[in-house]
Image 1 (cartoon, helix red, strand yellow):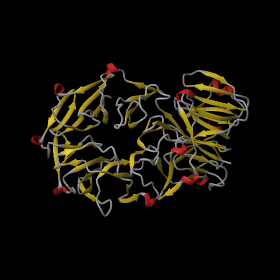
Image 2: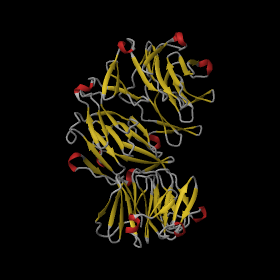
Image 3: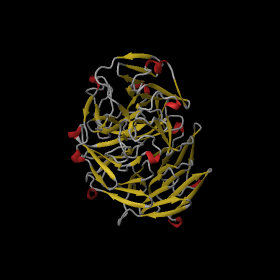
Length: 560
């Protein structure tokens, strides 16, 4: 019997968190088009049903900003942080999240409350900024990170703030910032930070500011949305057309060049180099030097947000127009649309209440690294759309044995499959390589597989433990300790790989120390499958065996 558990093992001091455990209610798991639709609300463990922001940190946890606490989600448990258990928090109302390149999570208070100071979560701890850090007493409206890991904030009160070296600096005329209304701030990935204003476009590069206006080729001095493409070009939207800055000069595009309209409300750049431009008259796609009009429906709508998922699909969220006369407004705090559009392979699909989603307005979207789209609603909780594909591998595909006992997805993307009698198989780039006793495995019955912090692969077999490193199996003192006995369980934790045999267990730490660990009771064979892999026994079908790829689930664990 195979039992799937959505979750992971999390150990935290009980006094520091409020942990709420759940499994998705089968009544609330349904199919929406080609997706599996999951829903979580207050009754499932959320502290509040309005999800204002969603982010994913490098360790895989999903973080949710709500009006009643900050939430960490591992796929099975909601852990809630608020002023009652986290002294660094002065409010429970959170409105924004941002993960910097170092992996730190920046948490910003909601603009409706009196508290405005952000806090940071890094390496398992929250940090508040002291009064001497120069932190401005304004709510943050948007955030960007430059190539030097400096942070740029636009705040209420028309302030531009830079955080660098542990201090906040409010930038003004003395720094080269003109007396103008600050708009969008955008880093381009090649060392520049661009700042839109109603008096032209600013570029910060090499510690200096440059200012561009219509005299330099811009179609207008009032700057709207900004976006950087994969080639390092900067795209600039204005109320009189679109401009691209490349090679030190501007190229201007308008209706005559193929745009739907000249008032550019939103720009999104894709991984494949395409650029999407939303204007007052509709959506246009720019690719290979050509503009192509893309209709979302019978009536064109303003675009609030576009998110690209792991497979290149574009999720489009309608919103309110940003231009009001000659002013480009900040994004609305209050969402109005409950509809999503998906652009994939040249086609548009609509996802709304008629398709099976909630009819509550959408606050936030997040496309995770495993292919799922997370949707934060106003008053309707958290939704997830995850692909419902199923791929299988069996003997005719190169699998040495269809009794798969353990599965591991390694950090390089390869999949390791321990079999019952066929040895250890490695699936990489659709090619299966098999390792057996002839290659150094103690036995061809592989109970468990794990990866340590140095990316070595460990295989627990019927007659001992093996480590795969440098393209071959090696024997060390840890392997010798388990020679000849079954190694039934390998469990990777943040700092160690735990090894369980029939007579006891060991923990091999990433700090190169080895310490005995007492494991009592019946051992359980457990494999951590990060991207959703399920092992079965027998033949190709799900009921009778083989190897299956299931829809990605955060922290999936398989117990045999």
